[in-house]
Length: 269
Image (tube, rainbow, N blue to C red):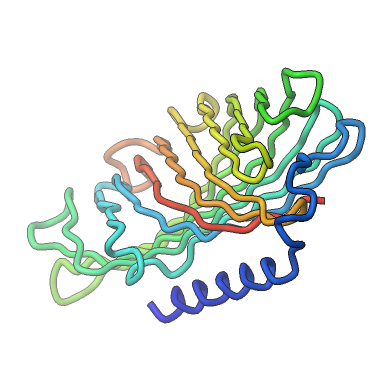
């Protein structure tokens, strides 16, 4: 809980600094934030992600429930963050997203193990995606629709300690996989001064490694200046991936959804 509180304080300090350095809202408030489409555009953002994790993870014949409720996030979440970068010119744009989550729980009932078996686990989750987009409209306007194509890589590191009796059994399993995805992004500046904006993004992938992968993000943001914005978002990510032979010791299955709010700050230049 202490680490999470420190991260909240650091995020608040960063946001406060950004607001202090930003120009007054009266400066150019009726001008759009975006440059000419013939100029290079860059965006960098950092977000704190309060994740709820629901689903299961199977290691061999033991299935461990992954169930972290929003109310437990502060106590169970050691870290949850997303970093975003994109660059574009004209109607084309490329970007990179990196997410990291570190969770841990104790005294969890395990199915597929002897009755009364409890588990403690540590779960680390890394995800990175590379994507490109093509804007359908010729000009940059307050309303924009883009087609997305990309690849998303996922890596998990699970440490499980089973306690079937007096002698604990410990397992540490690392898995990684990658899949292509396709989707869209819709952006709307819905006020006259271009300060308030909405972004809706959705994509679906899988086929190569995962059976299916669904990602959806909704964002409400406010531009403090032409350079700095703050945003509150909600993300839902579902993945169903398995490898190995079911029932054997090498079997691994990840079938879970990660979802929850994000709060962050972005910079455009």
